[in-house]
Length: 335
Ligand code: UT7
Image (cartoon, rainbow, N blue to C red; front, side, top):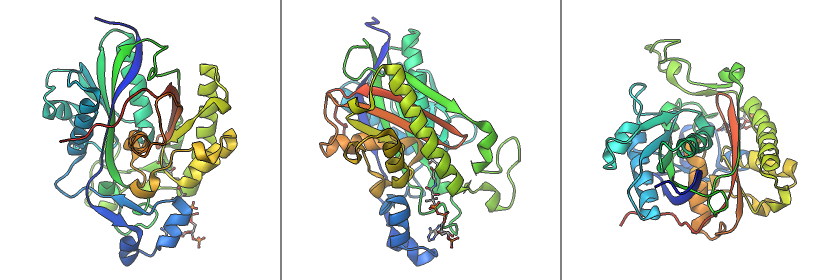
């Protein structure tokens, strides 16, 4: 029975591959240093999926943890945000659903790269608002380490692998956990700024691995990220009728500590309200926001009742935001 048309967070899960790769380890094989990576990005280490662990595997771990957190494995749709699916065709979400014992439910991928989790929340919220689903598992999972040129110091230190998830249920807009309005945008004319050039319908797979590595014009992307994240945060707050001062926690996409702090500064938000976990995760793309939520819950910096602003930015370009009051939900864990 539908008890409302708002999407309410009722479960949270995270999963990181066990292998830790420190900046010092990278410095042994790349022309970089712990000092450069830490001061330019805030990253100390990242997790890298071993060759036997795919995006689907990570999504299954995080999704299972979110279902445990929700106290029920009943969901009637699954939305997977990823830009690094196991295969170009088919989508990965049906395999995630099957592995979680959810075969039969609608399951599909959303690709908005690093903004994917916010886009997937909006999509899942739409399924609930339209009465198509009552409970939706939303997962963000990416393995960008698979797409980095091992010799490229401009991407290898930045990206890490991981997955995070929430369970949404139908409820009322007044409840803690209810997702507020969304602000979503794209700018496809800037697609080349962060791109995997070949392997799609535009340019078929080639023998040169360089055609299949992610390339990023970092400084330009950086500038767009700072401007668009601040704009989007302001727009969603206005839509929600909130002032910046009413935001207790800013959970932004963890691409670079300097982007998070620059965005907070533009908003006039004190640094202590900015959730930062990039130090041990790196940029995990679509996984970064739920991973940051899980870390903040676990260390006690995100508490029930906190008003939380979620803002993401990524390749596409894409960006977007939403707001919610954090409910009494803690990350779930496997036994
Ligand atoms: O996930 C969403 C999308 N992604 C992002 O939002 C990422 C946005 N971009 C960034 O975070 C930053 O642009 C980077 C961290 C990628 C790069 O930082 P930057 O401050 O923009 O550095 P830069 O690319 O302008 O390079 C500055 C200097 C250059 O040397 P010169 O030309 O000044 O001598 C680079 O060659 O740093 C050099 N450099 C490095 N040095 C040591 C670039 N990468 C490295 C490195 N180690 N890994």
